[in-house]
Length: 98
Length: 206
Image (cartoon, rainbow over all chains, first blue to last red; front, side, top):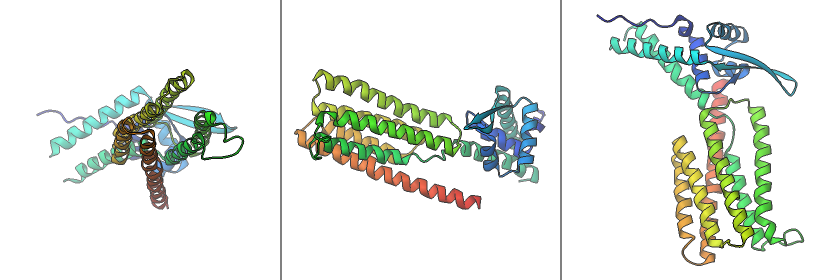
């Protein structure tokens, strides 16, 4: 019997998974855009983004546009590989269940 | 399906939804189609002498002034919109911008020397412009899987081929008709679609 793949716990959280999926389709995104798309609160969003950043899946940078601060996030290569692996594992798990 | 599998399926759906959400352009671009359609009409009317007055009397300035002016206006408005919309750059968006920028540069690179060298034949110029517009519309349409835009490309290509046959007047009529359908009608249709999408998103966020 083949072993079942394990799902990456860092990505498995619903909000973190949504954030990584969102970032996979764009070059980089602002904190406010991510908040709007996920409908999350500032505190929760900030905490989940920090977890993804600590895992090395996303990178953050700050800049000023027209004197207003902007926080931008982008997916790293490590994050892209992790999401790809997660999706493969998910499909494998679902496939074996059918 | 077990509860665990249902949750896993939900995760997969969440990934697909979020990726699609990221790719969706929230910026309104349809106005540029209508703007360029109007610019073509202004340039044609000016160069044909339908507009009177001291400035409008300079027919040789019609195309360069109208095209450069519209390009600058589009650039300025687009920059302002990008700054206010905050929507991130996506690969698809960058591809669309690249296609239209390359088409615009090609048009200037070809038509300006043609005009300056005196080798410009009106029917050939119309065919070149119209075929380039067809190419850009087709590339965008294929990329976005948007049948209406692909149909516009076909109309441009037919108008381009047709403009080489018949008289100068018939060629001009083909060009004017193609502008009407592919810039004005299609542009307004795209604006209506975007307006509906904005309303739908607004209602979903309430």
